[in-house]
Amino acid sequence: MRILKEFGKAFFVGTLVFIILGLIQYINGYEFANSKEILITFLYNQLYSVVLYMVNAHYFGFLLKQFPNQVFKTRNLLKGLLGGILVTLLGLFFIRIITEVIIEGRNFSEFIFSEKIEYYYISFIISAVVTTIFYAFYYYRNKQQTIVTEQKIIAGTASAKFDALKNQLDPHFLFNSLNVLTSLIEESPEAATRFTTSLSKVYRYVLEQKSKELVTLEEELKFAELYMSLLAVRFEDSIVFTKPSKLENPQAKVVPLSLQLLLENAVKHNQVMPSKKLYITISEENGNLVVTNNSQPKQVLKESTGVGLRNIRDRYSLLTKRPVIINENAKEFSIAIPILGENIQIMNTPDTFISEKKYKLAKKRVEKLKGFYIHLLIYILFAPVFIYLNYISNAGFPWALFPIVGWGIGVMGHAVETFNYNPLFGKNWEERKIRELMDKDD
Image (cartoon, rainbow, N blue to C red):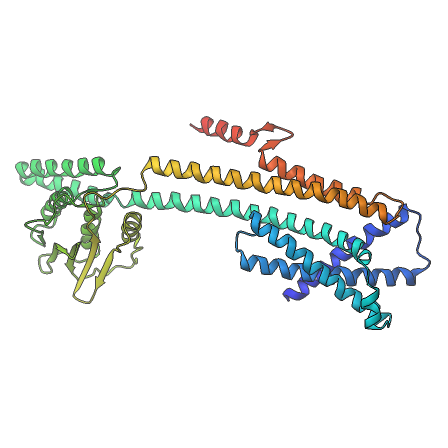
């Protein structure tokens, strides 16, 4: 099916070329003798078009496999240009064998020795123009796909940030805590006061630490103990919590609120009642902080999305190559998060991110400039070639204007894109309009 589709495209392109050449011949005063001559000319034209289109299309497909997403980089584009010239000349030679040896019945040796380069001029120029249009079309389509991909990445990043926000203290925890507080106010005002103090400390810690990349192990464990004290009041004696009595390195680092999320998951996904106590243990093992609980899963209809654990894995993947390890069996569930050295350097700070972003934008800008200047140089070199070929062909009509003007329009479009100049709205119009709309929204 794909070959038939490409064949159909080739036939369509050949028909357009036949019509354009026919118009040029008509302007120059040439008329076909009869319908038979028109048919034979059309068939020859289609032979050239189909063969040249197919060999160039297959070669371009080869380039896409060799240089995925990098075909239009300067080096690869030059390789494509040289290779395209070569396959086009080989295609023309193959067509000449078909027309001269097979159809006309000439001797192959005679054909080889009588071949001249001028037999290839016109066909090569037409092929070059069609191939250039094809490359330009694909370049435009590839650019649009790149823009769409970038927008998807931006949307994915925003989604990841949203997931990270969702994985801060669960709103249900706040609602449940307020319900517990309401009960305590009636039963024991003193206990209610202590509970309120602990709850305020929990949320103060969340507000203080949520913008940090790392916190000390000592701070995180103190917070975990405070957090579990609130859960102990809510579930009374149904949770048994154990933490290390002494830390090997209290100043080592962990991702903030990671313990809270793991403890919350243990309570969220397991049955917690006096008859089925939940045992949660935090320990240090092989440079990891391990949170372990006995497995007694709740019977729930809605399956867990795993957003919380994925969030922790993603955050640690930015800081270390050591993985977050999950071990699960019928009796026990445990998660080990890496303990990081106290001198670890955060590579993803805002200043570093902005610097890297500026470098990438500058690099992209240089690539665009280099690509445009090479394109312009090739155009300047080929324009005299078209004029010379027009001169020696004695056509009586300046057909060289068509590829020169057409290609020139392409160069102008490339310049507009490279230098961000819109002839209708002025320089940097798009960027100014985006800023204007952003300011308006603010």
